[in-house]
Image (cartoon, rainbow, N blue to C red; front, top):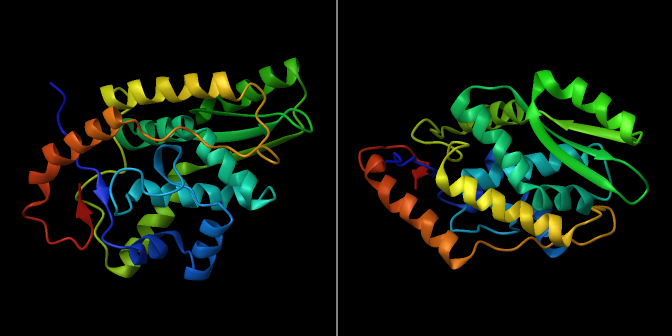
Length: 234
């Protein structure tokens, strides 16, 4: 039997902006230019009309990537198109205590790829890729460090994130099935991934997947009943 995991959701867009250090104008510009990102490859809260803490992490990953690549849309495309990869890294960090990284690498003028895995294996992985096709550029995202930044902002704003988690464990049935389906979509639709010029529109959660997440929400709701945290628990 899978034990329900409390997944944190935020009370308002204001909390989302606070945790991501995003100004209202920048947020609105990202939405207008279709550069907004969220959990599960979405560009808006994918499950409820309230943002998930996982949406906040997607945004700061996008912002971290955008420091090393332009246009900003390219960073958004990577976060959307490889949501399964960075969410898997997050799951290992959060539930296994393992040091995982997420990386994006440019193979040619029009082809990129992304990967996630243990930090200790990164040098060997890059060396292996270099033997196949020399990489023009590598951008590494330290998700754990970004989570620490979010935690620091939450503490400064008086928000309690201790009542739940960002996401489920890497072996949780929902994650395993969703990630497999998402990867199959990418392998079918994005044979050559070019975030600089190709608009990425990953599939939204299916009704079945949304129902599965809602069941996690309902199952874990009881864990939040006694909390006084200003951050709600799904």
